[in-house]
Image (cartoon, rainbow, N blue to C red):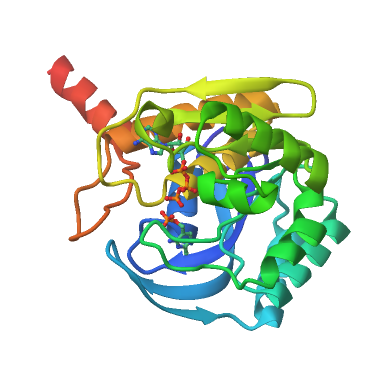
Length: 281
Ligand SMILES: Nc1ncnc2c1ncn2[C@@H]1O[C@H](COP(=O)(O)OP(=O)(O)OP(=O)(O)O)[C@@H](O)[C@H]1O
Ligand SMILES: Cc1ncc(COP(=O)(O)O)c(N)n1
């Protein structure tokens, strides 16, 4: 590829909320796409006034504006993968689901965002059922955290066995191709453990627990990295495994900014490159 060629550049679309603190949502998704050399496009569903401590305010975008952003991107640029994050309300979810159904997007990653790391509710109660019936059945994969997996499966999840069972129930009931139940909200060593189920086999993705309070945006980063890998043409399981490695490294390089839970760091490829350059001097 030379500086002027754009014909083979992979493109991903994130449909999510804006995080003014830059740790999660659209901001973390676009960074993740960029560090995978995937061109990032976006449809913003809502604007949050948010930092490392709290979500102060949430303003929904008009539903027609969300639809217009999706259409503007797909009609001209085209996308190889889509991820959804914070969708906020029933009306936005229905409209997004309709758009994606019309487009027949094969590589759809649904991160069923429900609460923030700081405890704020990020989706209306009535919207969860629309998420389950209209959007999740279209997904190649959904990536619930512990809390979201409890809501979606109706199980209380306090062990690896329960994570497995929840993944199976979600798969059976909601019609997605694969489920990844994330362990960030579990205790101790299970914090680095995620469970994959695709209707045939369970896999356990294990990394050591990274000892940091700066975990804001881990879920957004993981789902965006899966979408980026799918846009690059990888199969679903490889996309998930490589995304897990990416988020683990981003946690290792997390940013100690703000007074609360800082974001995961995406600068490691640059830091690693500059370390290599320093070593070669
Ligand atoms: N302390 C940790 N050490 C290692 N891996 C972790 C840690 N915390 C989270 N992870 C990993 O980060 C990924 C995201 O999981 P998590 O359960 O935190 O998602 P989430 O709650 O949706 O994140 P978000 O903060 O964006 O809402 C998973 O792969 C999980 O295993
Ligand atoms: C716009 C937006 N999207 C997603 C999250 C979830 O991320 P976290 O659980 O790290 O707060 C968030 N806080 N804000």
